[in-house]
Image (cartoon, rainbow, N blue to C red; front, side, top):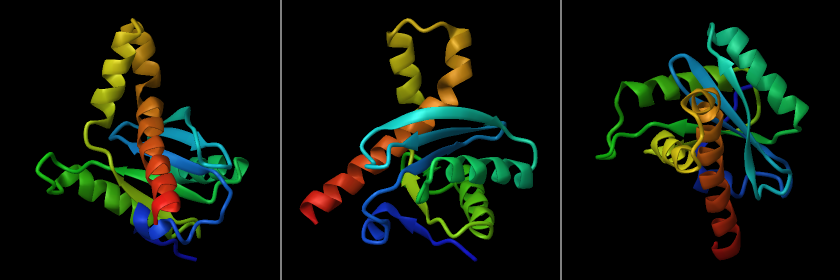
Length: 160
């Protein structure tokens, strides 16, 4: 049992017509988690997992995916602004490789450049308190990442 680690373009023809996806924003201290509806239209934050060690972290993510009947994961890949991949991107790829050993669900890598910054700006614009922003920024970043992938999947389905 080893999951495929693929791009959203490669995932489009492989995913079943229905079934939600789990979005992940991998940080050094937390993992933001989001989920989509079964029709893959809307992403919403689910929770923020405090990172401990890989095994308990992965078990929590797999449990969330199972509880929601997810058909795949979307993992944010923190690419540098110039398109290169630095240590954070390599850490995300390593996490994906390790998670792939524990599930058959495909892991879709999604360019997450500026996702946290965009979410932070939106929360500030809505006058959300600093404390509340700190509580939800990771799961909102995961929802932002997942929504981008959902929109791209929908575009591929409509335009080929």
